[in-house]
Every structure is written in structure tokens, then in C-alpha cells.
Length: 276
Image 1 (tube, helix red, strand yellow):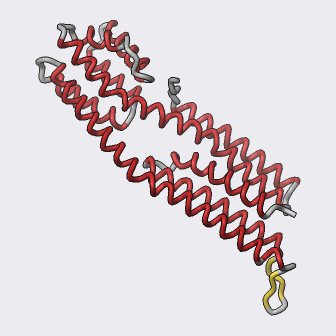
Image 2 (tube, one colour):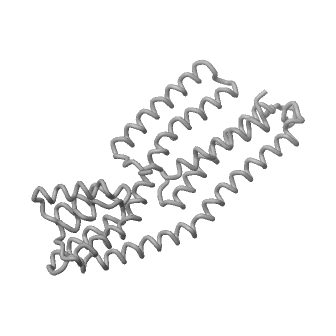
Image 3 (cartoon, one colour):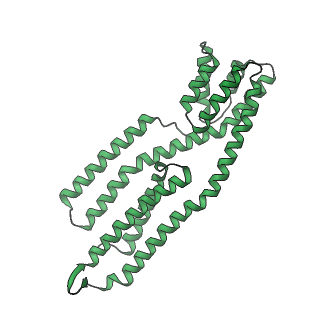
């Protein structure tokens, strides 16, 4: 199944709509539920509504760009093989566009169409790189263009470029494998934290009517429950951002981790602590 391309304007609209919905939920909670535990749940709902749609779009965009990068070596090898049979570069690109390279196929067909209209290879390839706009593609485009300007057989450009891209992908795959345990540590740390506050509340705070020092009431079990709830939200949200930064190099990529941890934290606290 092909992953759809997510345009920048779609991300902006998702953020805007999500923010508006989140603000509406917060205002509703402030007007009708202020001071109750249900108020905190509405705030959590507002946070999830505010970040879930952008998180989904960010993940789809990440999958699309990753699929693009993974198919680049196959594309370059196809171009080399076609030119070895005597095809010109436009013919080789047109022949390659008939094959399946995931989401790269549609972008390749657009480039071939522009070249068929008379656009020079350099301009069409640069436009192709701007549309795809992955980090690996931005490194590849200048190298291919500069090498093609030197003249000679362009297939001699794409053959080493295919090996270069493949080596980059292999290095990134190894890096992701090395980083994965650190992302798992974020999840483990959160669930250890969640288990600790649940056990602390059930074994100690739930047994007292109020927490006092020198006769002055400081915290009731209800207030402690809400405090732990707030702590779990902060831990889940920022822990998810850290996981995204470590795993994919972007804090926004951690929004999906934040949503997962927020949901897990809410279910855990709701089930084991509840809200009297």
C-alpha cells in the first residue's frame, strides 16, 4: 500500500484545526468542570486532540520520505541498465518511470513529463529534488547535476551514486538499530514511574484521610491523585518528545510516542487509582 504524500500546507491546517479544537475543549472544561478530577481529564483530552492529528501526518510524511530514499538506489540502477542498452537519458528515465518504486514513481513520472515538454535534464532533476525534498535527495541532486555537467556518459554518474545512496541507507539503518534501545528506555522509564506512583498511592496515600504537618492540612488523597495525574502527563508528553528526538532526530516525530504514553498513563491511573 502506497503511503500518501503530506504537503506542508496540510500539516499547517492540521495544527490549526487541532489547536482550535483543543482550545474549545479547554474553555468548555473551565466553564463547567473547574475544580473536579474530570476537569483534568478534559485537559488531557485537549492535549491529545491537539497533537494526535499532527502526529499522524508527521508519521505518514516520515514513512513517505523513508520509502522515497529506500527506492533511490533501485531507480539509479534501472537508469544505468537502460543506458547500457543504448537508450538516451530521457528514454532511460521514461523506461524507469514504468516500473514501481513506491511513492517515487509518481514524482518520476512528473519529471519525465517535464523533460518531454523540453525542460533540460538539470532543471527537471532539480525540480524533482525540490518536490521530493528528503535529506538524502538534497545531498544527491547537486552531485548528479555537477557530475552531468562534466559531459560524457551520464550512466557513469548514476552507478556510483547508487552505491553512495545505498551506503548512506545502510549506515542510517545501523544507526536506527543502535538508537532503538534508547527509545525503549524512555518507555521503560515511564512505565516504571507509572508503576511507582500507583504503588505509592495504593499502599500509602489511599490509607490516610489527609496529609498534615504540625496540624496543618496540606494534601488530601484527592489532591494527591490529581498531582500524580499531572506528573504522569508531563512525563508522558516530554518523554515522547525525547524519544522522537533520539530515534528520528526530530522532536515533532516524538508526538506519536507522546500520544501512546499519554493514553497508557491515563488508562493505568484510571484503572488502578480511579477518581472517587
